[in-house]
Length: 288
Image (cartoon, rainbow, N blue to C red; front, side, top):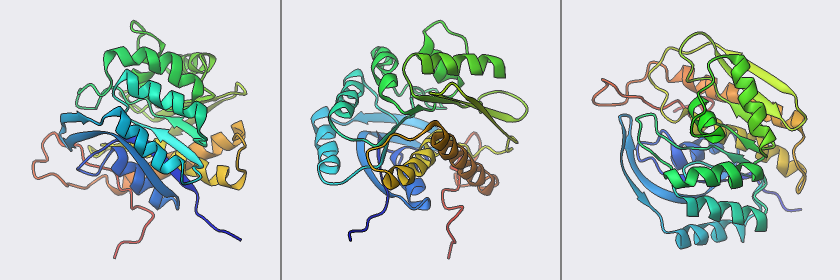
């Protein structure tokens, strides 16, 4: 009898400082016992102070990367991060219709924390109308959710507005939406999950006082994808139930909370002023 680990695929850009993107995804997959595979969409020069340059990867090479993985290995779950261009968004959507990506998480990366745009303006409409409807879960933050709903939509300011926006995104085609409340200014962090059965689940946890928040979105979506890969491997070809999605999201949020707390006092930059260090992806792994 053949044996294999759960397999997850990340389609995203790089981060040479190791806190976000493909690098964060692979570390998260490993920490959660999942074999990580990748298709790199862009080489991104960034560190704890922000993005300085983006070098897009040719689409035909991204196609070859996807072929290399999907034609050879059974993928239980996939996540997208930085896609960058409309043509890359369309490429991924088209691939989702011809290949089994497993449970499909979309982290709609649009703008870096530093303000650097990571998605071309003409690609936003493709994300809204083409990528959302093929996603099993999308994980926008407050600014991203507003942009996904329209160019003139204001960010949610209250839990009620968050619930309303998350419901609207499900109505527009996503099977489930985790609207992250970390961008809210004060109080506990409230994240709102709306699933395809219409149920709303609210997750509240204390806000951790730390500047080390680089890559939190990537890490969370990777953790949820890893949890979904474990579930999907146990039932190949099936769609996760709303209850299973809620469980995967809860465990992903718990992992991120532990990783944030563990790295809260780290100082990894030579110039700490204004730096945003990474979370501790190894929090559950014993260091030598």
